[in-house]
Length: 428
Image (cartoon, rainbow, N blue to C red):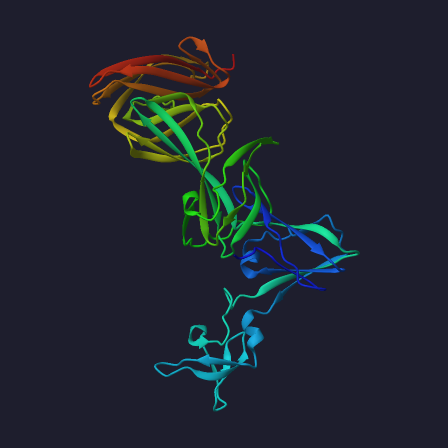
């Protein structure tokens, strides 16, 4: 089992205990307990760990240090310089050669000639490590005194995200969620304590690295060597949603571990054909969109949501962070079976002394037509702008108003609804 950190003390070699992970949507905090028996502590990280590390986030907590020096060490092949390795060229048997320079794989053959080899043509008497061509980074702390501490750093290589499935049918709907924990490096993590955080958390250090190709997805049912951890809510932390895994687990290299997450109860669920638009005095027509509206009995972190109707996928979108009991509304694309025709009539207009129109009254009529074999709810929302707006004789807030229509369109039938808009841009 790979360790995420290999810790070497100057006095003697030490072993790393299991790490703790605090995983956010776009980064993670890795925390590892360390102990120095002398006045120097050297921490060696593989290059894969440094690739995702956010600069300036390495820290040693609980133990003062007078300086910290980071440097890049040579790769494994450098330890073989001046020694015999074996080179295979074409169909010939592998021949012993001397590795002269590991940086560019310069070798010398038995005739004393120098040539540059390819790594895949070399073989060795000892087994090479993973990524033998990758250098390692060493961070050396100078300490006033020995003791125990926690080494921590932030990495973009480990993240998590929830994904939801909404299963709807004639008997109602159910919402469930899974949590995907992603490891984009070739390092395996042995995790003792894991916390998941959902919310808007920004850290410095530039954009995340390009995602690594994942070898496969590891689900909780595939891990036969340990009990699958459960994700338990831990409450709110300054606007963040916090969760914890119930048991230690292994996050394999280049993997996605998927665990059951939430199973909230829906306190509201509606389907409807909808249109959200802005007011225009022009006539328009088109099709409505397939909308869903729901509320859950617990807070929901933002993530992708897949909707299934009668077991079939009908669309996918994303939802944002939502507090308990707050309405979620989203569209899954157009519904060609529900069409509308919008007609606008100018009822009256008023002009000022300069002849400019300053107040206009419109009559807006929506005619809906459905070819479905069942009744469908149609909802239209129009945003109307103006200095003063009145909709159906009710004054709206200044500068912007919202007109709403709600109508049940019968199966294979039609329905019509109208509203009146007064746009007053006068100075009176």
